[in-house]
Length: 306
Length: 259
View (cartoon, rainbow over the protein chains, first blue to last red):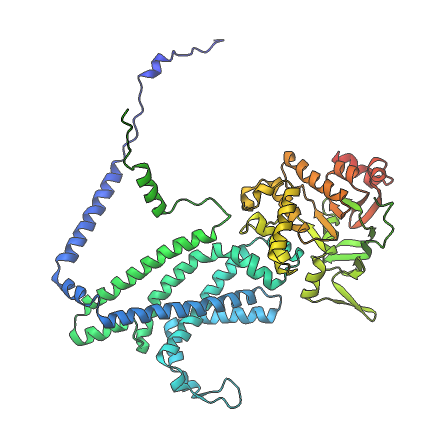
């Protein structure tokens, strides 16, 4: 056995490979498609869903105003949340232990209590402080007129959001290599410049994806302020069904608008993430780019007549 | 070069000490570096040479002793018989005089190569953008990377990144350059390009302090070499003497081991 016998190539030629079959994949696909069809059919045939009422109220003017209020609340509360969050995150990373502890206490308090309870607290602030002076002489503000339902909603949701967002921002800042700080310092950049120009832009890559979740979460959490009688999307629907008793159709109307806006936000998040991934990896083409490429490669070909 | 330099020393250290907790990493460093001189710091890992380098631009604060760059005390100000630590702003101003190159380059990954070079001169020195841009492009050409101005650092090789880092430091027009093991993180075949850039820089008369394991570079380019061990300078002198005819037993052992 000094030589290995090598079979001639002709023995291989006729053989073809057969991919493994996956019958279970077919079974699970059929079950799920069946279930989906059954549910959809039920949704569209059950008259109690009241689709005619849904289509009637989908573009109702008070629903539209409610939607605008929901969007305004989302934007304002997220803006407050993000600005405070950056401040809190920087405080958490401060060399001063008192500053660190203060920020930690803030986060613990606002994360530790339900946001609904916080909203009710702000709404009833007048019971605690009938007159608000901010400790300044000459300032006498009546809490009952100052704290409108809208202000209570903005304070409750915004301050609560700051606590959650600050943890996200802190994680982002910590994700940036310490060498970046050193390089910036060695070039003479101040701590503030380093944070703004070097650290935060890089932290954004870590901050943006969970912030997208927070925005979508905030959009839906604004429905809680219906308990303060702020005319946002859910409360507007509630007002209508309190009069005409079409409860389910109007909840569907509100839900359709919530889904529509979260879908748009999801697309926005996708492009924002790409923006902040600059310089870090080569990006896959967007769905839109893929569609364009598809039509370019499959465009009608003009054949030469030769 | 050191023979011609008769002006006041560029860097002067006197009894510099530094501890991390109970561990004393610098046990009284005395050293002077003349204007236009190239000094290489060699020695085993943990001997304190990088820490000393980082003290020179106050990335590390010294515990005692004095450290001057030019005629300013680094990081501190003498009032009466006490040294007071300077404000952030004043420390930043001192650092603009001193360029630093790191082992891991530490380029800003979210900026293009050109933006990396232009950031500090515009933000810190408040120089006009056009003027900085011209200088930056000139420096990139000098390090052989003119065509990479618009690239992001991640798309460059390690050697190219380090040359960009050198250009970035030079764009601040420093009078002293610190190099912290500039070639230790590079593939062996890329070391040569970086050393060539440093060699050219030395020939322009830049004062340079280089922490390095490249004994060949130290012998060929440095005016003097200081051998660190255990937080102290064991031996310092002209490069050829220290490397070819070390006086101390410890230096001989180290050089025998790294060759």
